[in-house]
Length: 463
Image (cartoon, rainbow, N blue to C red; front, side):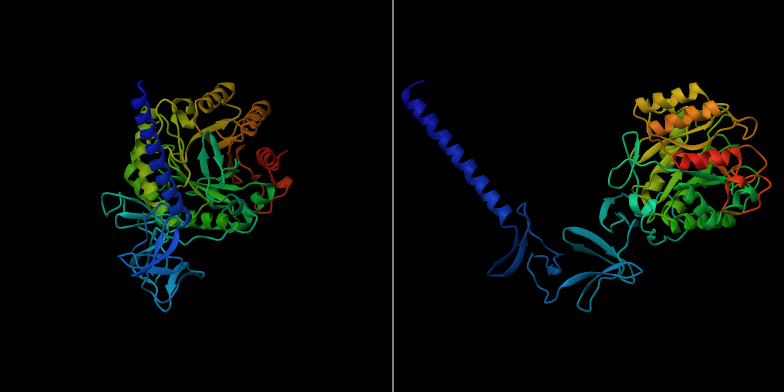
C-alpha cells in the first residue's frame, strides 16, 4: 500500500469513528434526557427511545394528538370494591379507550376498567391492557353468561401466594416462576347425589386442613343425568358455580372437569363442549385459581379414539378458552383413559402455552408399565398432571395395592407432579374417601375415613 493510500484510509477510518461516536453520544444523550421537555409551542414528553407521547396520558397529564400538554388537571387511577377507574378532575372515561403511559385501556359504561375481555376486535388482559387483536368482532363462540369480577383470596392461601399458574418446561409453576405442586381431591360426578354430597365450603376447608390445595369438579357428559344427556344444565352450572365459589373463598385451586367417559370420543358432544368452555372461561376469566380439564378419559367404548382425534378436539376447544382467558392452565386428556401420555410429544397441541396433559392411574391396575409411560413423556418434554388417581384397582373397588401405590407416590413426589385423588364421597367402594357409614359432610376424623381417604390425607400432609 502506498503512503498516500494509507493516509487516505486512516482519514476515512477516523471519520467513520467520529460519526459513530457522535451518533452514539446523541442517542445516549436522548436516553439520558428522556422525560418532560419544553419548546416554543409548549410542554411535551419524550421516551428513552427518542419517540414522544401523543394522544395519551403520561404521569397523569394529557398530551394531545400533536404531542403537547393541554390539560390543567392531573389524572389519577382510583379503585373501590367494584374495580379501577381513571379520573381527571370531575371527568372519567366511559365506554371508550384511553391511552395511559403507552398502554391502551378500555372503560365500561360506568367508567370501570375492563379486564380479560374482548372489546370488539381487541383483547384486554387481566391488567386491563390491550394485548391482541382478532380478525372478526365476533367471538368463536359467544358466551351465554356474565363475567365475574376478580376475587380476593385469603392472605397466605395457596392462590394468594402463587397467583395465576404457568407451565414452564414440564413443571407447573407459580406466577413468579417457582415450581408448585397442586394436590387435592375430585368430587364424585356432580350429576348424582354422591357427587354433590360433600360440595360445601366446610368440606373443602377440611381438605385444605389436611394440606390439600385443589378441588376437581367432575361434570359428567353423557351418563344418566349428564350435561349432554338428560341432566339439568342450569342445576349443574349452579353446582359448578358453588364449588368454584367455595374453593375460591378458601384460596384453593379448582379444576372444572369435562368428564368424558361413556361417550369415549370427546368430539361426540363437540357443540356442547364449545359452549360450555366458552361460558366457563368467560365467567371465570378474572379467576387465577381456575384450571380447565377439557376431556377426562377419552377411550374406545364408542370406536377407536386416537391421539390425533383428541388433538383435533383440543385444537378446537383451546382457542375458545384462550379468547376469554389468556393464561389459564388447560389440561388435555390422553388416549386409553388418559394413560398414553407418551404419544403426545410427537404431535402436541397447536397452542402450547400453559397446556398440560392428563394421566390417570389406579395403583392396583396400573403398575410399572404406566409409570414408565409417565417417565418417557416427561423425558420428551411433555408436562403431565395426574388429574385422577387411587390406590385401588380401576373399577373403583376391588383390592388395594400398597406397593404400587408407594411407587406412584415416590415417582410423583420426586418429580413434583401435581395430583388428584378420586373421590370425595361416601359411596360403598374402595375408591371413596369417606366410609359409607359416615353421614358427616365435613370435619372428618381419621375414623371416618376409608383406607384410601387416610392414605391421601397423609400424602397431602407429606407423610
